[in-house]
Image (cartoon, rainbow over all chains, first blue to last red; front, side):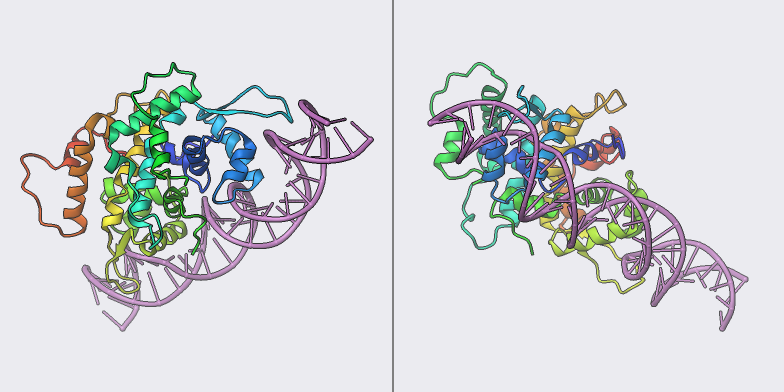
Length: 160
Length: 160
DNA sequence: CACTAGTGGTTGCGTTTTGCAATCACTATA
DNA sequence: TATAGTGATTGCAAAACGCAACCACTAGTG
């Protein structure tokens, strides 16, 4: 539709570079919000319904989300594709940067950064868990709580 | 000016989430473009001069770039701050994702990903080199070509 | 001095995108 | 029939975008 250049950074920005797409993905990933209403009312930033509808169509067209088979007026469930799951490092990098450089004197101070503090292995664990939830991958045997549960226990989710 | 929520991901998106800011930073970082004209004419995507002027002001206001002391009509040199240097992981994550999921059958195939192939230590090397170039940090003794030179030798810069 | 080229922008102006409120078509439940 | 919930769509105003032309200033040349 719009290839402004062949640069891979530009290719990603053309899909994800706006004020809402990455926040929708954040809520799908960290908030486990899979339905229109959950994304609409759960958004801390207050996304409008038409914007959300537009972004969901774009993310599906871009191959980042899939929309379960649901007719008009019926509950449609959105799932991440592998491409969507692999946006996780982008979102984590943004969250870490925001935590480092955009935290006023609010309660965010002291929160752990995902990449720098938890390490890349933790990101890989999160992605594996997303494959179980969204791609029907076989659940891996856990020796403890899931990585998302570990985050929730520390009240450390970016969406929080 | 506009805190839609306290989420760190949102904080980063409010500053960097548009179609141009990250591309300007890409050109500053990987293309070493430090002046208005260089950024204007060097942009592979063809940024308009008013948009570039607006983004430079915003990036300076956000503490990501500094504008050297230059009066009107004089050559102004833009430098990265530490916050700007630390956007590198974000840009690399976007580039890696674009390379994996947005590369048509063009010549990008086979290009190395920065984070996954080169590893986090290489990103740290790039950031150190940026500190030398932009923050007047003392140059570190190199046992070979600089990390940017290594990228250029492989024609592997995201801006390429 | 005048002339030219180059610097970093600014100004109009028309098009596109965004944001908000209200509304819609459909389904499920009672 | 009535009511609530689903995923959107519509209208309209505001903001952002894109393009071309223009501006104020500096530096160099003759």
